[in-house]
Amino acid sequence: MSGTDPADGTAPSGRRLGGWLTAVPEGASSLVLFVLMAMTCVDVIGRELLGAPLDGATELTQLMLGVLVFAILPSVCLREEHVSVDLLDIWFPDRLVPLRQAILNAIMTAALGFVSWRVWIIGSREAEYGDATEFLEIQLAPITYFIAVLSACGAVAFAVNVVRYAGGSGPAPAGGDDQSSV
Image 1 (cartoon, helix red, strand yellow):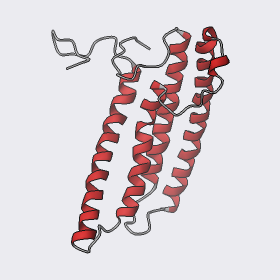
Image 2 (cartoon, helix red, strand yellow; image 1 turned 120 degrees about the vertical axis):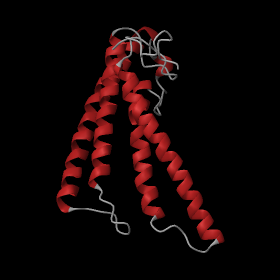
Image 3 (cartoon, one colour; image 1 turned 180 degrees about the vertical axis):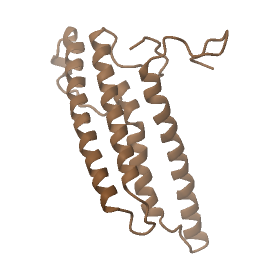
Image 4 (tube, helix red, strand yellow; image 1 turned 90 degrees about the vertical axis):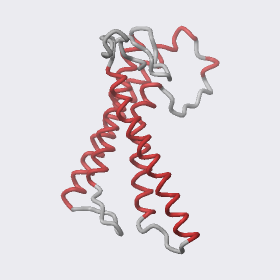
């Protein structure tokens, strides 16, 4: 029941965009990871014990890994949990770190927004041509659109960080319990 008012069970009025931006994708990525794990177990057991691997497991694995990576992207962007190289941090003045982070997050907002736009165009092309996987004939356009939308959500997460740094609070905490409004 964390994140709810104990008196009436409703969400607190301080709930911000970041909570929504991360909760749904994190749930989706958890579900995809579980399905991927179960499918891999079935495939390995079928291959090793029964001599009959799961048909299309390779295609499904590839698609699910793409969904998994991009489903978690908004959360990673919002919390700045991505891989970063900090070789120059020891020479960078502490008082300028928020400004640097705001600038970097603004650049990443634009870059991920551009990526989202281009991926959406690719999805439109895939839909137009009817592109599908070779063995299972799964349409690729819906997955590509999903990747484009979650990339856009990642761009929004970076934009939220720009606002947070401008307000002096930095990225969202890893626990997601921050109740400041943005």
